[in-house]
Image: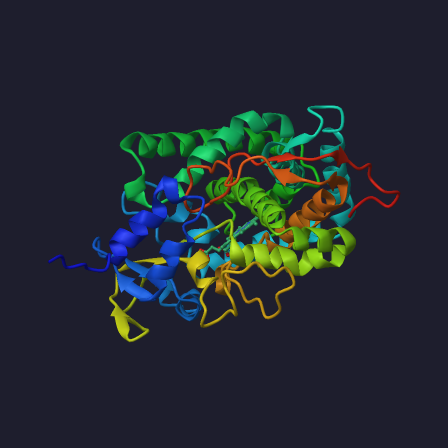
Length: 409
Ligand code: HEM
C-alpha cells in the first residue's frame, strides 16, 4: 500500500521557481493558494491570496525593508523601494515631483518611437520579428534614457549590468555562489557608471530628470549624493527590466487569443482594459517581499515579528475569490483590481508610463502585422523568476502594413 502526501508549500514554491516551469508557473501558484498564508521550511512566509496580499501591502507593520540578510548595502544607501516611512515618503515625494510632470503629454512621442522601431524592420528579415529585441526592449530603454538624461549609446554597458542585478531579486536559494558574487560586482559597476554620469551633469545641467533630482529644492534634504545614485539606478533598472515583459507578455496573450487580437485591430480603445488584463493574467513582476515589524494576524494564523514575507502577486491575480474565471484572458475585463503594480505606499511610480508604452506598442503590433503568428509556443524564457518574461519572442507575419496617416497610436 502506498500513502500519498500532498506536497508541502516549500516543495510547491520550489517547483514554481524551477526554470523548466518558467513558461507556466500558474498551476503551482493555484495549489499554493489553497493555503493563502503559509510558513515555509526556511521560516519565511508565503502569501498567495488576493485579499491577504492587499492587506499586507497596506499594513504599516509590514516593512518594505526585506533585503536578504547577506546584503552588504547600508540602510541609508538603499532606494525608496525598500525604505519605510518617514524616509520612504520623503524620497517618493521628490521622485514623484520630478518624474510625473516629465511623462505627461508623452503619448505622441511614444507613438513615433514605436513606428520608428517597426519601420526599421520593413526591409530587414522580411516576415519575421523578435518582439523582445526589436520592440519590447528598445522602447522602454530609449524612453527611460531620454527621461533621465543617460546616454542611450551606453546601453550595452548598463543593459548588461541591469540584467545581472535583476537576478538578485530572485529567491536566494535559486542563485549560485557565483551569481551572488556577480551581483555585488554589478552593483559596484552600476554605481561607478552613474557617478560618471552625475559628475558630467553637475557641470552641464539640463532639463532631464537627473538634473531635476540633482537640483531639487528639497526641504527634507534627502537626495544626497549616495541616494541620488541609488534612485537613478532604481529608475534606470525599473525602466529597463519590467515594461519589456509587459509588452512581450501582452503580445503572447494576443497571439494566443486571436479574437482579442482582431478586436484590438478594430478598436484601439480596447488597449486600455487589455493592458490591465495582461498585468493581472501574466504580470511582469511576479512577486515582492516584506518583513514583519510586529506579530501580524492574517487568515487565521499569525506571522511572527521578524519574519520574511513573500507576496506572490501573480498568484493573488488569479484568486477565484476575487476574480471571475481567473485563468481566462478576458481583454475587456471589468472590476480588474490586479496587483501587477503592487499597492499601498509603494504602488509603482512608473505605472502610467508603462501602461502608455504597452498600450501603444500592442495597438501598433495588432494594426501593422498582417497574420502574425508565434514561431515557438511557449517561447524561450529569461532565467529570472521574479521579473519574468520571454527571452525572445519570434513572430512570423505576412506583411508589415505601413503606418496610417495619423499613425497607429
Ligand atoms: C510594466 C512595468 C512595471 C511593473 C509591472 C512594475 C511593478 C512594480 C511593483 C509591483 C512595484 C511595487 C513593489 C513593492 O511594493 O514591493 C513597483 C514599484 C516601483 N516602480 Fe514599478 N513597475 C513597472 C514599471 C516601472 C517603471 C517604468 C518605472 C520607472 C521608470 C518604475 C518605477 C518604480 C519605482 C520607483 C517603484 C518604487 C515605489 C515605492 O517604493 O514607493 N516602475 N513597480
